[in-house]
Image (tube, rainbow, N blue to C red; front, side, top):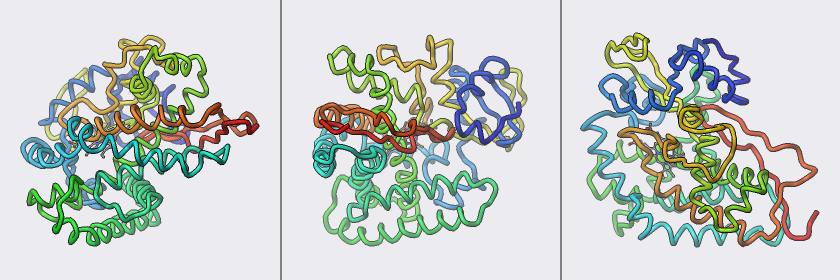
Length: 386
Ligand code: HEM
């Protein structure tokens, strides 16, 4: 099926609905990839790692960011994840990170609470996500704005299929800046170990190259999704006052609101795979080296699981959603994100900023992206300011 890349970037959901209905596994020439769009097909194929492989030796992520655990299969992947995952497992999030998330969110709100208006994307979403990620990675000395810019530069670099030299140069300079930030922290961390990823991976004896690749993965994948979920969910609640009322009345939890927002507008819309061996599935013949995209954004609107899937409905059951993936690469940061966004960033802002509302005279809030998707800007006011 052909797509118009510009309108797919603007809003992929109508095209994805058509694919689910008439061609659920379809080759899209404009993306050079076969898109798998139904929830059950993704759920099944993602676990079949001997066919749908994460190992993409010549992929841009390996070339530009180093080969991290997301681009490995089987034992090689398990060994690396075994070191990484315990640092942000649900237990460690509760023991170590949750308290810190409350502290950093309060500090960020202190910075602008008296101003009466702001753009939530830079001042709240980028700041909260970035401060949390500084602590988790161990790169505590950097500015959250830099971390956000590095994250974006790597995301753009990895999707630079047309080989734009400017995009590549920005990605290279971001990864160099991250290497420099790691160098600055290594001596301290070797002297006094802490709970951060950099410390834990280094102490476990993980080779330096692997540590660096996984820190870069964490920055590219751990900044923009919580950012987009924070800004997007606040916008969704302000745009749907009936849904906000349900959560403030205590009828649904803030975590559930986070889950429903991420089902409705998935912060990560897709995860790529390489076909490792000839395979037939769903009436489609896959050939070695074919590129496949698991479309999580589409799975999350699959009509066979979700009634009226295009509606934001905080009371629905979201357990079938694939927001965080569905296989061995299931998001390692899921517990941290549920805590940061669901337990802290969402309730805190509504608690602190009385009368929070979208600016009535501002331009409509725009969302962009299909691989990653979030609002570009969310101008709000509160208190007595009109
Ligand atoms: C709303 C927030 C987030 C969403 C929606 C999200 C979503 C995802 C998705 C869809 C994947 C790919 C899963 C797959 O291919 O099956 C993934 C992988 C990953 N995510 Fe997240 N993510 C979020 C936040 C984070 C954070 C905060 C971190 C780290 C601090 C993180 C670290 C990772 C890592 C390391 C992987 C690769 C895991 C592996 O290969 O085993 N993510 N995430």
